[in-house]
Length: 352
Image 1 (cartoon, rainbow, N blue to C red):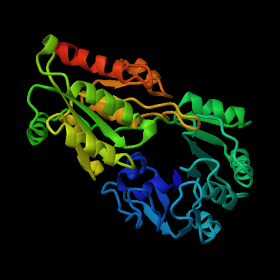
Image 2: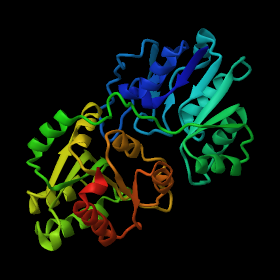
Image 3: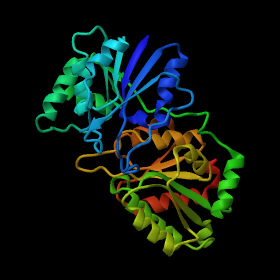
Image 4: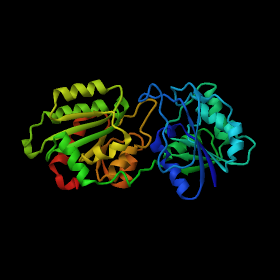
């Protein structure tokens, strides 16, 4: 089968793994990506790299509005691309309201192919024109929608989408994310961690991910002396980057023996730091326009053998219940989060 994907995520090489797997199954794959996309992590532009196992076409085209995921659009017509590759399946790995999704669907009109659009939007939102019109066009044109969760499917149905819904949970590379005892020992030695519970966070340092809640819990537990009430000490490891980095650095400054912040860690190193942890914390917050869409770090942590403590924001609670891989605490309650972590520190057997 010939597949053409339109995918801004594939500007990052690791996101091409999915397409490498499709190739391994015998499919012919071509991927279109923005050549000049800018993100918070790469304000000067993402350097497009190829995933070693992906051998297909990686077509780079310049876009306008290069600093915005939903607003960026290709500067050159896509119709010739559709004719050249003549895909049997067009997979638009962009939200239905995105300019690039509308461009791809419009460029494919009248051509013999199956059209699939991706969505992770789990809150029903009404967009202003022309984005509402573009979204309606894309949903009418799509033969199927690859949805990250049941909530996403419900949102699309509420928007009168009548095509097929294809469950499309985020995957994990179990060849990379797995227990690595030697790596664990090396990274823990770098942290100066002994027998204490290492509580980890991996992701964006932003309000909606519950960073301030986790900081408050860390503040409480950092002040908890080892051995008090029979509880071992805790150490917190934050891996990622974002606007709240300064607050985390201040927390690290106040508690240098209990808090470590690692910024600028590549995706290829994340699994190593996960192996240094004993439990992953993901205290995400439901916001007016956002709730946790899936929580890829949850399945990555589980693949490394870690339990997870999260909230019930979006998919977190469902995922933890379905896998039995952790516990939930109420949102916005650092005391409850601290109590759960302290309990885990005291119950070593429950973590193994």
